[in-house]
Length: 620
Image 1 (cartoon, rainbow, N blue to C red):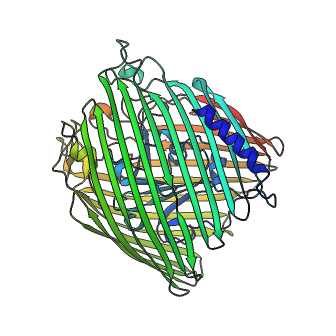
Image 2: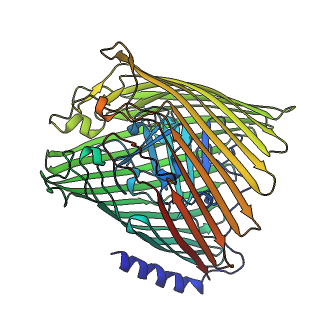
Image 3: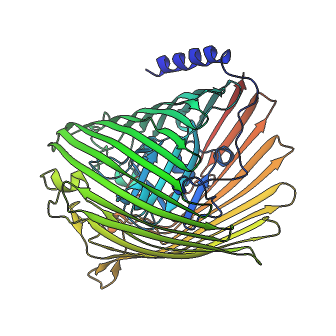
């Protein structure tokens, strides 16, 4: 399959070389970072909420292979991988459950209906232009389940003369990755298409203490395309499709002493497809209609048998941005969602269905680059639960004399249990579960010094979630009553002399359930650390050599029981890229350079010291 895709990409790129205009190279506009969730009128700096934006240049500079690795250590996020390469990887935002982190890929809601969560294990950075992380409840535009926050991912858009890129990387654990990308545009048409193959012998999914003894391999084939056509300067249609096919081996929780689980593997096919249509009426009304499809088929082969889990999501979304006057605009619309999920084989359950409809309305007031005020509400109708109303208020204010930007927000969120929680009918479901209701408050400040050479940011947040859903020691989902999560997110970015720059992120997150342990202590949520630090030192030499040295410090976290608790750990990485000439760039990176022996999840392995090298070749 991957060979066929690579041939298609190569042929397509050759054909388009003669079609696409050669008037300009593909470039990235880094002067202003517009925020998708605010009708593209607010920049990251002006946005009155908590947001982190990764542009394509920042993604290149960090030299990570996967989205999860890029996001590990960022403000408010806990990233946990359950074993070898490609293993299930969860992200928690501000202590909320992984099902409360809603992921969008090119406008497609991508959380699995069965688990409610998104598995980051297979999501590489191929053909990705931009990642937005919005922390705190984001239900107005993004859907009711976004109690923890939203991760919004956008594929690259072709710009300028046709350009093609071939890349290769190889290294530890017999890991190899090759990819091919082509992109370009003319007045009417733009395209960006890529294909990649990543394969590795991997590491044991279980660590040695848990009986791990053999390597668990991984294969990932990713195809991504974005095509757009401009009917007029104000009307255009885009087509997005990302296809991921992966195979990752895993271990029995009983270890491999009997050699029976050598063939255990997960085989996953993911399709993300959307065709947003955009037009503008009279320069003051933006209209957007987005049909989208998410389809997933996950086959699992284990010592106890074979199972296939399917997830299908069909959505039609309507969004309108109406500029009432130069200061005030209105965002309004609605969506319809048809969600399906089922399983055959081991612990089967019939395909269950949920239908959802929603209407949303938000007002945005902006005044002379000093005041931003937003207020919005969303009404959700669910075929399983009663209707729910959520809302959010945000305020941002800039003090002209000092340039200080203050922001605050208050919101209410709603998250329904997933299909596995409700409908499996077995020992690991609970049909009496109630939806989570979360109320969140935050306040923060941003301050620049020395003509933006120093940037400081500080945000305090406090959230209380009623009917909090979490599995107990027997892996049965329960409503644990109230869950409290409060914390402080702080960051500093410094541009230093001699082309050095430095960034530091720290998150303090105190979270606990209102139930207590037998010892009388408050119980924290599982797999979330109280303290997280991430620091990076960058350097650029003569516009040819880019280097980064990164430090990641993660505090201890509670597991489902005492045997799965994880201790604090520190990892160090380094990467460099050398632009040999205008076409060829050489890359080198090292991970876990001090060979830290650590766990992200109790019993699961993590990679020791490792190194990778490769090249990126660009041609017209």
